[in-house]
Image (cartoon, rainbow, N blue to C red; front, side, top):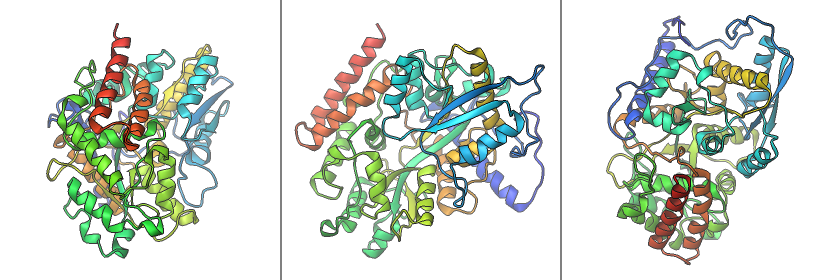
Length: 482
């Protein structure tokens, strides 16, 4: 990235640059977690979007490329274009790499969303892990805590490494102490996505968020869900899910949007149960179940089920990243989603008045340790190349770039451009710290969902649920801090 010069000054390019600079403001603001303090955060570079043409190359090597094969495990990936036969990794990324390094083969294997952690854990025990995995810090950092992941500091350009290390929130989500374990270039946002057409059909579009940043109170959120719920037709305002650990993101985001937080600053204690606002959040969640405005029996529903219900027009609200939004558009194009669906991105309901907690995540991609140093070396080269010399992972993952580089995938889409504008509020609004770097984080995820299940079937109150989760989480922290 360093040393490139920006070329071209068309109006379109200038508009894209403005969007990119807005994103960089978000990265700067996130350095304090919730305060408007941008000192030392990654700043925008005046650089053009790198080419993905065959002429693009990693730094020249003094020796010829080895003959080897690297394996990638990854969750299901999107297509770059609706008419592509394969996902973006298979159809675009690997062919670009092969043009440059034909003797370093890449083999990609897609894993289903459900069971990724179990498959990787089994592979770690059997010492059959892949060389590379495309995944985020919430799963990678727990594997790194167990010694399975290679640090990436030596693979990153020195200037970039220094800027990454100056951003406290980025380091919390991608590093163990001073060692970066997850490629830190991409940044993404998670919001709610609604099917606006359901509210239009119910003559209730006026109940959806109306302000510039699409915020709403819990009461407004509940009223909107009630307006589209039709039990006779099997349609509900939203779907909650607690079948496995994937539900933690939904409920933790709600806790933050009610004004509480999960951990203290140094991750030595889970503190959510000490704040009555956390209990208010769980009471609100339970009230939506009790009042029948969410799909019944969330204790039996997974995140994958929730996505399917959204595509089938059986529910109106879905937790969504940019990739989720694009997947709905692609499903509408290929006929696997029921029309009409009019996706609209909005904030989580919040008690904070005109703002909400922002779910901004950093990083994707890691290298597993291996007894073969050549595979480790070239796995790192591959990850560095894809993020610094191509725009393909940003387009494919639907992520933004931490340095504000123009990656062009939001252009012309009002919802994605709204998401880009929202991310720029990171210096003013609270940013959710999910605790990825806590030792035992994956155990905490596994410990949470049975307690949510008990709450949903009335075996525990919201207060008891919080207290039990806190006891479990603090016991896990104590175990690893002995």
